[in-house]
Length: 370
Ligand code: GN1
Ligand code: MG
Image (tube, rainbow, N blue to C red; front, side, top):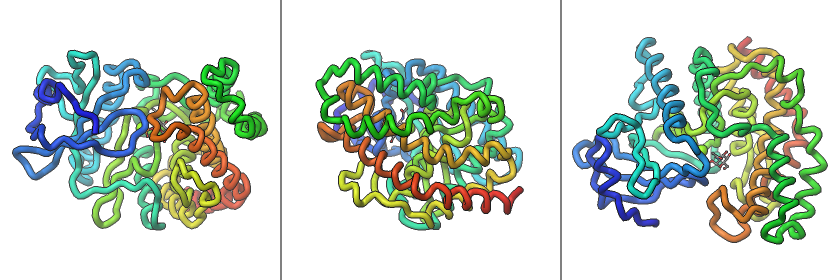
């Protein structure tokens, strides 16, 4: 575990009671560094301390504003409706003693703190249909509750985050630069990406831009961003870094990317990557239960496009980072980003094969709620 030399300096800025000797690394995020700390005075909750990667999130005050806005919206709605427990079902950020919900330390690093919700678990790979159903319900409800939050008020945390045309441009740039002499190793992957490029431009078409509404979405709907309680029920959506205005289909697609895959996102043995269609069905069922009523017809039709686009986009992003010398995502081995690329392309291949039957499931489940 990385040591934090100025841990006392950092934690003493926040309105918290932490035992600094209890510091442990936490989670599997690719961007920020997350640590867990024990609460010295209460059994209610521990704390998560995060170093925000400010090379990725360039405007931390604005990023924090987005997160706090969404949290306040969700909590207020629950309080007004008198439903659920806002302390347990929505993230709670810890303020600094001087007010803001982040602290820039003496080395220029940015930190934030939130409550760690006890008796909850996350899963990198979905194990049961019940979990998938709960995940669908959780993300569907999250979107439904944010339907009345104006997308215009949200700051664009990472410009063009889901713009595949731009992402392909970044890949092309990395290929042309070939700064780490890696292009020769990745010719088959580049060819696969090139072959599907045109079919992936759906969301860039004028027609979609005119018909698909922008909504406040999560934009990182990996299944491990849903906290499940000990009974296996979804309790809280976490990792709100990328909440911003975007299309709903991206959230649906990114969730399916992690839920439907029988293997991990970075599986090295490609033959292990298969689709678990019952999990797709279960997720879609749960999702439609919450989202079926607010989705319009164009959005419904776009969902399957999101399912195909998101693994493709991840492959493009991982490969770009590989060619750029692994500067964006954390890696655990020298060729990790290439391994991730291959795994995502393999998943995409499987998804292409089954896209028609998945589309049928989407419409069937949506119909029940419209
Ligand atoms: C990154 O750090 P993490 O795991 O929450 C990335 C997502 C990718 C994901 C792939 C800001 O998320 O977009 O989908 O890795 N976050 C950012 O696992 O780029
Ligand atoms: Mg994230």
